[in-house]
Length: 294
Length: 294
DNA sequence: AGAGATTTGTACGTATGTATA
DNA sequence: CTATACATACGTACAAATCTC
Image (tube, rainbow over all chains, first blue to last red; front, top):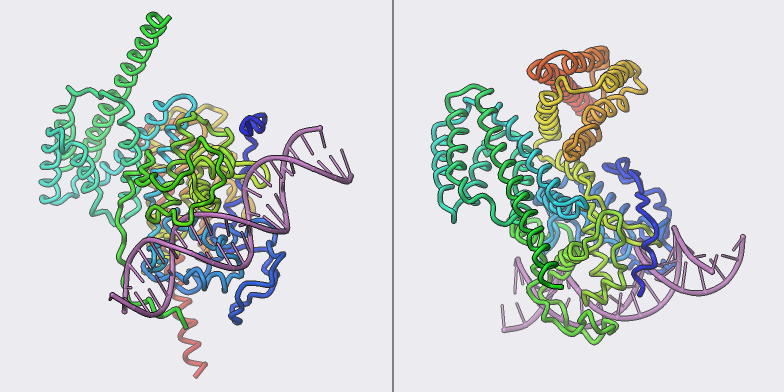
């Protein structure tokens, strides 16, 4: 009975007022109350702090700033909640929400009952955003899946170009073996993941591998929504992957890129046809339901 | 006096136990207490709930699940905190932390005093993670900056290949104008941003543009750390960008890719030389300080 | 423009589970 | 097994922002 009251407004997005406070703290009013780092005052006698209503965001920024000032590296312990409360002069919930934010971004890692530590800032969490982005698309999930696949193609084709002719014999053998294991329905998904993962494992740029992973994850979380992908095309999967390996081994950059492009063309085609069939069966179900039900 | 106590352990990372609960709720123990959605019981008489210590995470998952069940699209209102408290049977702080997590991921957007709404799941927040990743690198910020630049190159070179010969006359004219504006020191950064932005504006795949933006943002937050980039090379900037436009207009895919690659080669070179000079001046300062100070 | 209602933001106190030593 | 340090969760109260009338 309370829900419909606010449905009138469309979607006044707030806009991007944040990219300014990415690095620096920018906490405009640290002239709040007492609570200097020196004194060990329990955070009381406040009763009207709240600079303006962005305490959590500014607290998160200040924590990041703190980590930078103290030159804390991934794995190092972050001050405890109590210390942050004393140091920053905010309440526990504020610190907790700020930590929750940083934890979501991978900037810190929390271990229950033990402590909080600087994180590696992995991009892992991004796949969650991507998945939601796909499933919340009002025009249907298909276009979101197309975008994911297209993005993967963009990155991996480029990487194929770079990797052509640079892989060691062992690496190539491993890739061949993984491609073969894709013939087995049980191992297919894991083998596919390992294939793309070992492909970019030796890369000096760790971002590339992580980004590939993130998009791979998101895609493979979403794609099971399309039941009944083309079961027949699985030997084609093996073939495509082997061709990629071949091109990486002996071919030039263009050949590797072409092989990778064709792999993704296969994936695109399978998604499209599966979506078409899904739409058809859906329509058929609807027809039979409306025909028999009334 | 409390800080050093926990510095002994290295960094036992938790590992990736999460990609399983990306989409579905997977809240293992909803057999907690009462608090069914039907009854409007104020969440009391609990006193020992806490299934196992992951209430916030599972609450966040359940909220996402809720949004999916109700087919809520970006812009639609999310149930209020009170409703979520009643529906999910958790305390307010738990809901708030869950919302904070989803807000960080761009899955919801919160407006003080008004309500919470489904978000567009933009990748904006990623740049924050990227920035932290660079500045927290124990081996120095330079390698992180190299990675950012390399990642940008990977994506944008690939996009240049795609865009070659497809841009409209107006678009090309706009790009030319933006390139010219880079001669002005005042407008340079904004023009650069707009250049790369309008380049990928018409793309049907919105992910590409966002990803380019994210890496652009992160890079340009970090790069001012290197004071005194080569001031002399700025007409080269204009030239490089104009050459990209030319290649996109009349050249083939390879020409466009080459032009873009050369642009990034310039950027790489400038970063490296600036870093080398910064290291040199730093060493000089240290020498003079240790020589004069003692 | 003023008052009330709704909703999110912040603060404080307390109890409990968890991991380490 | 006990002790300790820490994060987790709950409940409540009040402040601030926004909307509606």
